Length: 328
Image 1 (cartoon, helix red, strand yellow):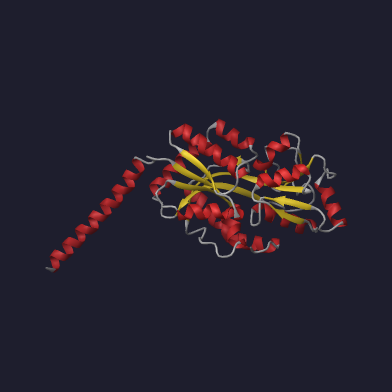
Image 2 (cartoon, one colour; image 1 turned 90 degrees about the vertical axis):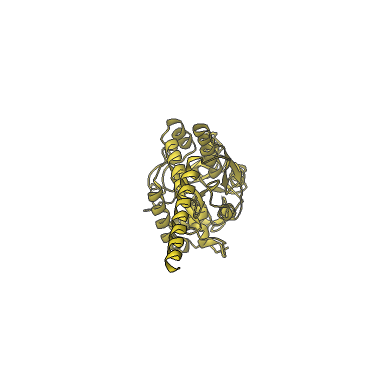
């Protein structure tokens, strides 16, 4: 009887392992067999939205899959992340994550219903971009030095708009204040586009933004770029000085974009998506489309993306605390 029990148990374990293997193989071979939702955690028109739609459209064209973008904005991008975390780990829901919502948000928003390193799995790194500080073409500020001089003369009078509390752009604004020894007034918006429009209209003195969100209006002559926050100049805007050019040593603030799926999504599916996205990023037309938005395309393996992601998260608490940003 005991031997029969062991035999039955062994058979059950073997069948279970076979079923799991078959699920993984079958799930990959016929994946995807229905539309894939790509959650965009910010409103239409911003940098995240633009890059997400480039990837969704090109992925659909290249593979014949149906990738459907869906905007779920609010709370510095954390609402969209929550939407993705709640989804079933079947490979049919993914989200465009970035430093804003995954690295900084957990340190700035209390009681988030997810853990960024446990409830999501990195799938494909897309691009990185510096932050840009710009102003209306009608503004009296011609250089970042002009802003610093005026801010020192009238602390708190100069305003800057950002896509919202808890974003890397919000943090970049705080870091700028501390590095320059000035005081600005932060005006948070629900996404990049509303902040952009108010900056053009002169309702806020400065715009702190990702380059993808602002580059169209810069090239249209409606915004005057003052500085980028990366260690080196942007290849999309090579004439715009860095903060280091303006005398702020070691100033280097950038953000990145990448695709994530819910934790426990089968590895075979995430690897398949990673391979297809990395193929896209090697295509000249896709690289040009991303560069045209002011971002720098960068393909990574899942292993390398995961390592970068976790390292970024682990040291960002000190960055947030040093910035003086308030917990929401």
